[in-house]
Image 1 (tube, rainbow, N blue to C red):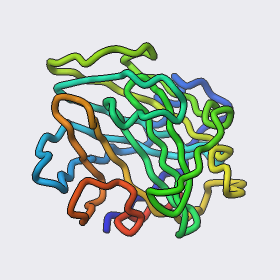
Image 2: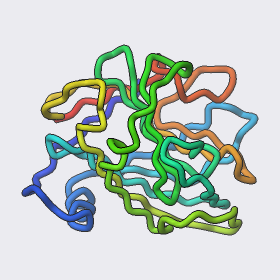
Image 3: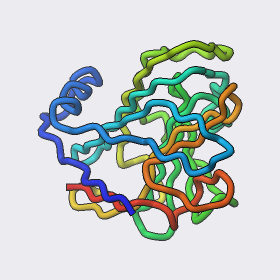
Length: 215
């Protein structure tokens, strides 16, 4: 099981998204998402992330290199996993978990529950509190093939943990995983930070989450 320490960032609140990126990149190291768990899907995009927190917000940035990009979903809590998508799953109570999913133009999907089935979507009004900026913009597009690099900065406020009362992230002990997928791209792929031991691709596996501790 991997372990990740989420750095408490030195930042005077509030700051712009642009300034948050600079702080995150100055104060944190990159982590690789590079585990291919299922041999039927060997394609592995280049993927790294940074993560930190400022008490009441998680700051998360993804860096992606891939052959195909796709961004068709524009509905909050829609099927973003079909597009070029990065994901962050996290459990703060050891039982239930949140799945934060973002396609490459920043469309958001957030669910909550114990497993894959019977998940409860987070209300769009709450989901929209997340600040996102992608270098690919925010307009949908059909698949493009070539050699693409894109980045996405994400700020997740504690209000998005709608089923838990989190006053501060400082000292929080959690479990989770980081993912990249693209189910309907020309090269479907399922790449993870912490290894998953299921027979078929499945990200809804809290038993395969790594340890995530917030400073």
